[in-house]
Length: 469
Ligand SMILES: Cc1cc2nc3c(=O)[nH]c(=O)nc-3n(C[C@H](O)[C@H](O)[C@H](O)COP(=O)(O)OP(=O)(O)OC[C@H]3O[C@@H](n4cnc5c(N)ncnc54)[C@H](O)[C@@H]3O)c2cc1C
Image (cartoon, rainbow, N blue to C red; front, side):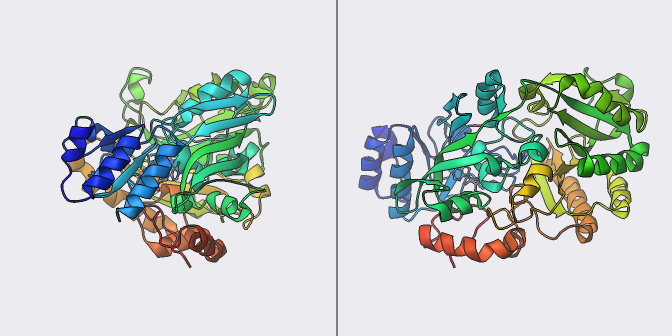
């Protein structure tokens, strides 16, 4: 490490870096070091940032040291959890990346139904630890997504209707503040901060550990994707919308448009066809599942039907292979309160133009337990929205970016007038302050006050930023 430290050129004070490096228990990487390029890589291949220093922390003490070092050296700090931010907010050009990816422990207390998760875990770590106990923390649809970013932004997934957002299952966080203090925030300690981190993103500090309520689910559930030819979109989408608004909370399903990948698991006659897809998850009584799915299967003739009994961790990682790290990724989002028949027809128009095999549009249901929390009870404001919509232009080849981005933007512009106005912060690019305010609405002033109290100099600003107010 000493040789590495002497190579520093100008960005940081060498003596301070030496002192920091000698006490640091994790790994440090700088441009030119072996492992630097691997360490700086983000999920979105479109984003190519080069931090001056990457501090891969071993524990909470390392995080405290890194925050103090970055602040004292005047470095811009970015915090990397799972690295999945579409906007690449886990890294920074020329600054300090505090990398939590080595902090991956999960401890389950089945008797108390509590799950302690280190700040750098991905959801696969959590699923693997909770599933043997028949427990789950509500999470997302791709298991390589970071717990850190997903949770702090809200957290939508297969269990949202039954158990609420991920933040609705959060009991406490251990967090390193901008001034280097290490504290716990919960309903009883620093309750204002605990309110803010439930939706307010990485604005308030670096979370080294999350304490969640584990919910009874699985290990086996009934679910998986059912694909319908695009010509059935109107019928299927209306049916799915009504079921998600009125059906039992044990059933969830996100709607998407997908191009059938040309791989063996799909019948060859459907390869590269554009389809309407609902990926289901039913966590209720499995003996009732076939009965419950009969009307779903009767709605229109399906092209491919993969729904059946499946371990919840398998379902929650089913799309990992289709969306590996490194693809070029551009997305636009909105919350939707009323999914009108008119909007459905517009969706169909853009589904016909899906610009690449990976490009997609998803609508995630938000109701049931998520609606039983008030819009001012946590920082996450859009409690009355029924769906989160995200339009994603994706392709492995940068040469196709112009096409996928243009499709995504135009699709979003057309549907935006049919939306609730703001968007889920976790599915936005870097879109500026107005868009962040639109997502938090009347929670923004309180968030700004709490930001002023805990991070008055906006040290943590590489995020969907809330300005100290
Ligand atoms: C393929 C894919 C699938 C997705 N599916 C879902 C889904 O099903 N449901 C859903 O709700 N969202 C989903 N998302 C969105 C996801 O929630 C966000 O991209 C989220 O920001 C990813 O978190 P991360 O830790 O991996 O990201 P990072 O890029 O590491 O971080 C994102 C932001 O969170 C901050 N952050 C991360 N960890 C911490 C921490 N421990 N302490 C403080 N700040 C931290 C970072 O500083 C940064 O501002 C998906 C994203 C992708 C790319």
